[in-house]
Length: 202
Image (cartoon, rainbow, N blue to C red; front, top):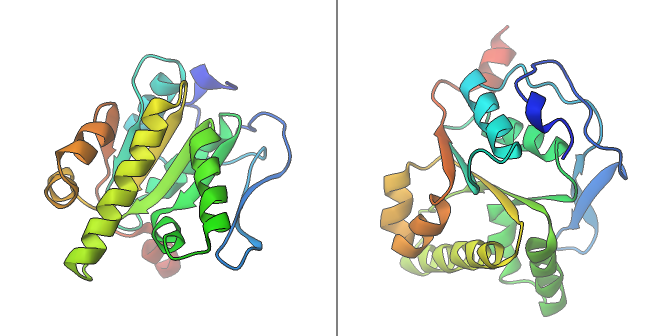
């Protein structure tokens, strides 16, 4: 992995050279949600202790998966994408898109699950409990468990999960099997206000 030992540097550092985009098809079958990789990405907005933790994970000193918790706008996704810049074959997927995929045609479901299984790094963004119904909660729990189980069984897989839920809430909602797989590695909790609103106010 590129730059694994020097992740604590705050200036932009380019990841390994590879095709410019890692994409996934949305439910309409076209390629959206594009994450541009292989270009410099600033790390100066990532909390220094979290930068240190990511560097230790990339160096093999701390375990995966990595769960980044915190309120909206505290920099969870920013940190996860900086992690993606340092590895080969990353795949970014929002939890909302994954849940919607349960209602998509089978060929789209199969294609997405292949990506989930084979990617060296999976970023599962914005895992939420939801407030819809008991059936919705069950669907979310079963989907999350399947992702974590697939990733656990794949050798040398790396998984980063972001969520605005506290660990206790996730455990109560999704059960001990998901909690065990989520928190068997490293986790970091961010605090603070929404930085997007702070930037707009400047």
